Image 1 (cartoon, rainbow, N blue to C red):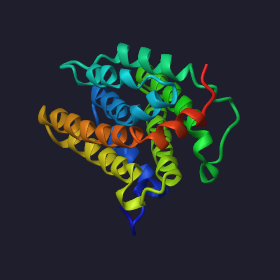
Image 2: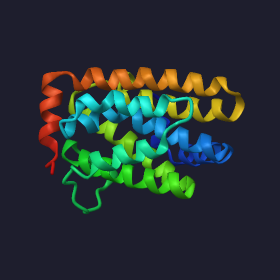
Image 3: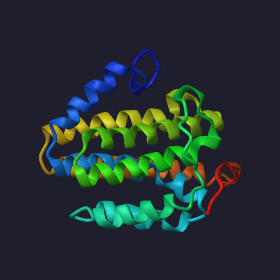
Length: 205
């Protein structure tokens, strides 16, 4: 956090973060990205009426060897049900109605990044997830300091640092952190007004 705001809002931090990710081994880079998507998955699942599948997604991540094929398949399947359109959005003007587009961008970039080991694509995917969480915080009046976006900002950084500096315990710590973030997002999505607003925010197919 910088002066009460998430570090991700500062371009220099984004450059620093990408340099941190460059230090990671290829498997850890990909896990770093999937952790971000999975933490926010209850939002996507709620939008398309598939809340009962969120635990399946977490289990694919938390296996002793992350099941990337399953994660790609599940995320592609869910994102295809969003009528997101192709019009580019401007970050500063994002609203809840743009949440489907943000998720579509995140999934497309995550799939590309995981297959090609593209740091730019993986980073872009996590940045769109952050934008989506910030939109949700704003839409439902969640204070920034207590919000999902702030928690994601912290998790990004801690995941990347621990993956670079620690051994096998880094994965355990990251999965515990992911579960905590995942549960926080799920708790918000369980609120009836949030669930209804997310379902109405996108045109599903």
